[in-house]
Structures are given as C-alpha cells and as structure tokens.
Length: 244
Image (cartoon, rainbow, N blue to C red; front, side, top):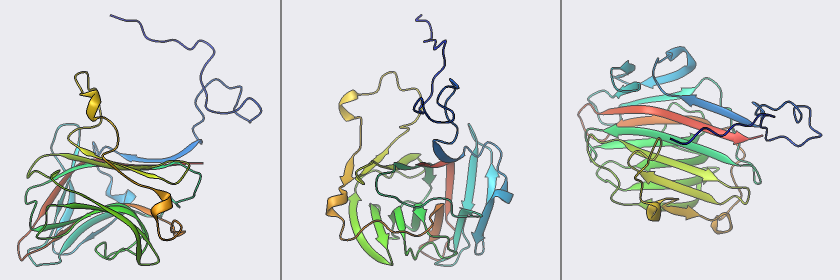
C-alpha cells in the first residue's frame, strides 16, 4: 500500500504576495462553490416550483432527492437557489455537474444547468444548460443569451431508463465549453478505460454567435411532464463553481 503524499509546509493556490499566500492551506475563496449531495435535503435553501407535484428527500445510497410532477402535461418540479450566484465571465473557469435518473426517458422534459432564475424552466433566456425534450431521448447542450441560442450540440444514446447519468460542463479560461456525459463519472474509478476519459464534446467559444450572457445564473434541475401522466426524476447531487 502506498503512503499518502504529505505537504508539510501546506498547499495553496494563491501567489506569495496575496493575503492568504503564505498560510499553507487552500484558499477557500479561490472558487465560489455550490454543492449539495442531498444526504440531508434542506428545502429552505431552495425555491421549489412544483405544479401538482413535489420535491422531497428520498431514501437512497449517498442521499437522493425525488422530483415528482403532477399528472397534467407541462406540470413541473424544479429547484433553484434563493439567489442566482453565478455570472459567466470570459477568462474565468465555470463548472456544473449533476447526477440523476428518470423512470420514463421518453415522456419527460428535463432542464439541468446554469440558467436565469425562473418558475418556468422550460423557457430559458440566459445560460448554459442540458435539455431533453418530451418525445425525444437526445440530450441537447444549449448556450443562450437574451433568449437567443448562440451555441448548441446534441448528445445521443446516453439516457437509459431508471439508470443514473452524470452530466457536466466546464468552461476553460478561453471560454470553450467542455461537455461530459456518462455513467458514474465521479468517484473512485480504478478500472476506468483511459481511452474514453475526457469531454465527449466541446462548444468552442469561437463558434458562439455572440458573447456569453451577462445575466445572473442559478444552478437548476427540473423535470416537466410531457404527457398527462406524473413523471419523476431522482437526483443524487448537483454542483456548480466559478473561479474568482
């Protein structure tokens, strides 16, 4: 068994001249971070929009959150933070990650990503987000500014009913959007096939038809019924962060 690496003088991201540069501990303010593993669901942290349905903590390994819509088409269940804490900024890294599963991969609409604060998640005016339309199993990655789609790409063949999927994106300092999708990409992966690691697609900043949106963006997860039947989404975690 190999021994752990020991940094006896500490470790930090800061330059030596910065206020915390000599402290020897990671700078907690280097990134603004939101994370929720749903081990204990505190609904007071969120604005919940649920028409005819609910969002509630659920039993499950490592914590789960159950979204349930009403049984009318367009009924929805959504969570967002009370405030929108992120703005896309060229030159600053931004990341979003979520793990969830849906029982019915056809008759659901899904929204997951960083979008404007809204009670109608099916209508996005600003943000970067994953969407799945009712009557489709494709996942679309959208970049929207001022209600106009300025960049997009489609992921096909990633959804399986009642099976977790990880979806994430990472914008680098050049504004390029690296897109990740797959089964359990997070955690210990001793037998992972290195040949398939990395982003499955990219949206280059140079391909966008306009600059990033400047609106305040909110970590969002939502499911919308595509037919007159209640739909569910079961989430394991959601994460977002921005480099300060």
